[in-house]
Image (cartoon, rainbow, N blue to C red):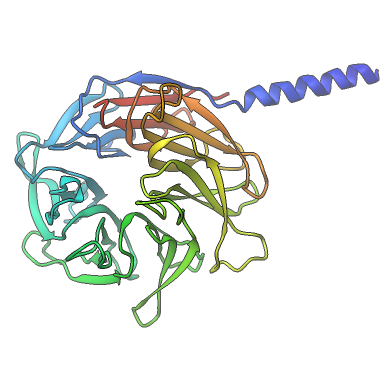
Length: 395
């Protein structure tokens, strides 16, 4: 009887082990990209299915779910190349999705940097109309978030480098949507200008006080930016970043995930455009506004470039999804890596490598594309110029 119980226990444990194993099946789409700089999953046509929206080097397009028919809404010549980032929002209040679009990228090596908004209103032959917002040199990442607490979100803009030279601080700013966005200037609010090189930021209510904060990843590490009652912003360092590497240092991409305990973890790539997957965790009794513990999960990659946190296996925590842009060696390839928390304090994760070498991942996004209750992954490539869906087959 005892032996039977033991065998049953082992059987149940084994079943649970395989049930929790992450499994994905890749599907290569027909769309060919120049550089897939950014991807988002949005319902573009109101059919309750997530479509794939992509900022390509010289165009903006969306792929219609489930046929993945390509719709090009901004073509070559409508903006100054390269298009590098976009942010969805109904800017003109007509009930349709618009995009703010950052272009004129040029690798951040030029003083270019145009910000415009694109809308289907007034467009012709599937092409959307383009309205200029402003020039902000080396603009690299943009997102809409309500940081002023008014009735509209603001467009948060993060350049890569400070101006007039790279020793000056990056102008992290918020642009207010005016009443007439087609013709009126967008008022500017300065959030921070003290960090010399930034790569990305994340707006969220990090402190739980009902107000939108900003987490930034820069040469100086990870910082929390909080708006004060008088309208000024306070900056607190939460993560050191990799300060030993040269010439790049600090941290790159940034996202926030959830552990089974309900506590947060902060995920980055380090150093800037670096070779390490890093998470930061806070001890239970540790003050929120203090340096969090740094854990290196993986140092076998080259040019980590995309980070996402999502629940992929319907358990109590969120997995960390990483896109690697370049091959480190013939045996350590670019592509998709997934890290699953296995320690209660977030100090240890298991790594799953998916489809190595297939996509030189510049960006990725996670969402349920086929409405089966499981989150799928879409990756867009740089050198590989491709779009690939990774269908979640985890049981």
